[in-house]
Image 1 (cartoon, rainbow, N blue to C red):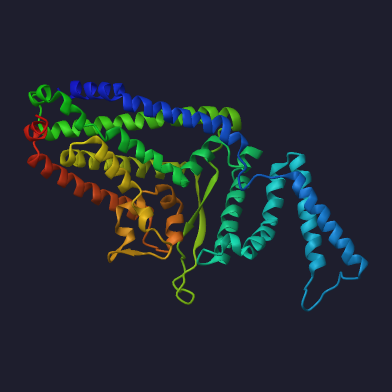
Image 2 (tube, rainbow, N blue to C red):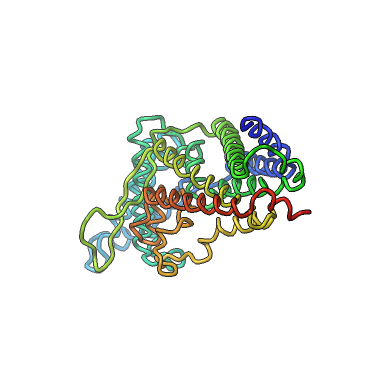
Length: 409
């Protein structure tokens, strides 16, 4: 009976017009990104050799002026600007040659030497970083993470391509998607597909009331089918994305490093502030960690939708409330907020809905709360699921099958 019910529910979910149209919309967005957005997109790692050549010419012109006025020495106030510009000139000119020769191993080695110039410019640009608590630390962190990622290219001992440097290979695109705010679409899919898994049957209440299956078991079957359907759709979209991007930019490598931010390993702090440290994990480990937390979040929202369906019996209300829950952290989020109503935010499940930044340690870094970790996120989500399961069981006994369907009579 259970097997037949699962097959029946799965077929019903596939035939629902709203699901069908939503999947088409997702495919359209995916194809638009792969064929239109990604090829034309310039990332922070993109390189413009013509602009760099202009910088080289400008540096040469400044140096000629220094030579003409005899300003190539050392000054107490000015330091050694001529020597510094000479070093910058050599790095940038050689970087252009390495890029044009497609010697990308040498290119990234030279580019790592040039990060000092970029970090210095970022720190001075207060219009860009002035609204964050510690602008200098922010620039330093970005430089460190980029250095670690570039060093990972060299340590992996694999052919380096420009697409890899731009982070446009299939695996890198997936990781950047998980790290970004757009990853919320993964959880929204679970919310959307399961929002009507119970309420849609009220149109056939006479038939379902007579089915020889327990009410709570029926809810569990519907939840399982929604979970399975969501994963099949997501993996299908993932497979299409990997295929298209691999043809365009290459697959990438599981050996590449993903930079992460971790709390300081030093016991002492500096005037009440503990500096972060930086490390790397492999692409394979990052994806495995993502596969460890995403199913929990998907299951959590499906069970929340089951609970809301019993209470409100309306798919649109369920969809609206669950979506608000998904983005609830955005309402109160602040980089200086560590507690909400006296509860540390590391104990709230919505802190971990932004799962990509939990894995990378960016969430901890943004609010500087060391208790926000991947391991604690798994624990908090398990506890939340347990609470929802208990509530769902109790509510299913109160709002039983007969009461649920009788309301439409």
